[in-house]
Image (cartoon, rainbow, N blue to C red):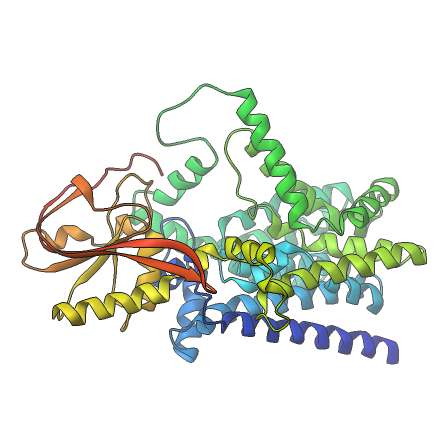
Length: 502
């Protein structure tokens, strides 16, 4: 009992230390919200049943957290930080339940060493809550299978319903559990519980159905386009490109579990294949199914590196259970792998207290890593100054990307609704909101801000250009990029690009 308590204490000491590190990162003045975080925050300012590309949970969490902490960076990122703790705690509980407190502890440590966990637990995106509710669902469902109690299945369904409201890909839990029940010859005993689980989980699909029924099923068209099956002009199959996408996918997935831990994962995988132990098959199956499904899709379309990784948390338990029974040499590899995999992200996230990040090569890496999280607050401050100097009392702000528009909405005073001028991009949430058309023919001032374009070009014709400048942005004293700012009066013609892809 004493040893069990010690492992729990060690878990909380390390996990809370990482929480503090992420809060310090969030408070760094040169780091802004990631552009996707800003977009999801803006969704919370426009609450709906669902959104163009994602279910509503990410917006709901932002709505709650910013109501408590204000529209601040910490108010947004606290959701990811708490989800990260939750993912780790569930992993600890699952490992302890299956094996021992020691395995539970190392399961959580290996998980916290994986880059996929760092992304989900640092930046508040849909993967944050998806990964938490996936981990919780498979833990509760396993308890239901092994204990045979309906209550475990009910709670697993509730967790999965929330996960489905985070991201629709959680629906992969159905074939995973079904396959496991068939493999273990548990289907006959558990079929009614499984059906109950499915029905409860599908309640999380209701917001998506309501919204898509009202909006021409845009989300389903968007998902079809992402999978290579819809929108735009069809192209002949290119084998070279397909295999290039596949190998890029494989490399990205290896990076997401940490190159320092790869020997441990392969060792655990080989042992699982040889033993076919029920618990180990259960831990391996979701990761393999997710990996294989997206590997197939990689031949058809480019796969974002984060898409399959929500299902990888159980790999940490599988690996910990294996390595805890290995020689001292393997355990040293584990310790060094975990230490390096946690230490390197901490080095880049924390302020430069050692001054090592002032070394030019390291500074260049950090600048590249945080490129999409810098410069937006200074841009917003500059827009304020320009409006004051020109005597403009009110103006609407727009850009050609939802990234810039969302960031400026967050950092401008009073968080005004900003707008996107489509100049060639695929559809997104801004296409479903009122846009610049409402200002056509009115004697109002619009401010165009862009990293990429010199002007709105033929997509928006104004009567008069009042002012323009290029604002150079720096990161820790080093040049990063420049933003074009133009102040226009009276939108006369509005002719946005009509996107035909989802």
